[in-house]
Length: 193
Image 1 (tube, rainbow, N blue to C red):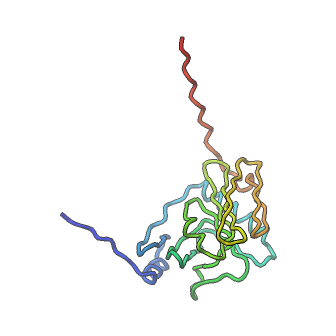
Image 2 (image 1 turned 120 degrees about the vertical axis):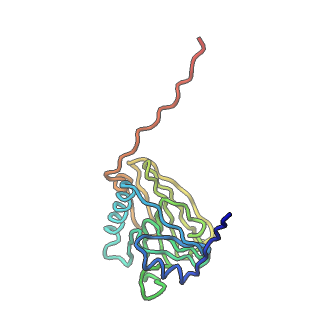
Image 3 (image 1 turned 90 degrees about the vertical axis):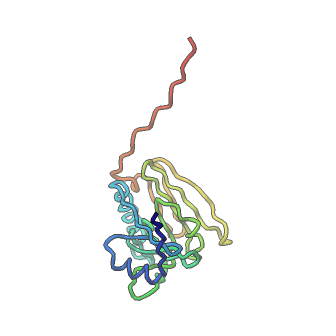
């Protein structure tokens, strides 16, 4: 019987492999995890988000990056690629490769890494964007720094306020050119006859 043991990498080994790779992988606790492929609608949503935020941040001291910008969370050791990253002020980059940010202001994604992300002192807002219905969940860090408020906007007529970067996102713009499956009808109860 063959036993396969896991290969654990140092952060430096991960970064050397990742920077030479053709595809992206995330890193946590010594292990690399290949990123899964994304759908057409996911790509449209990310493009729409980057466009809408970039236009509103034009001529302001903020930058927006699509999913190619790696974010490092020192407290957890996670290296990850959020779908969209916004940073206000000077970007804190780890080394002279300029590909690893440590001070995002807003993170937007479809996954759930919020537990790790909220250890970043710079993070003010975290958004989860659904790709199968028009819905955005929003977490906003409160003034005390340790509490977060949750809200959700649903429907194409909704407007989402991002106070940390002073932007407004219309869900109709986020979901431009995205089609949703028709709602599944509720089952009709049988009547006794």
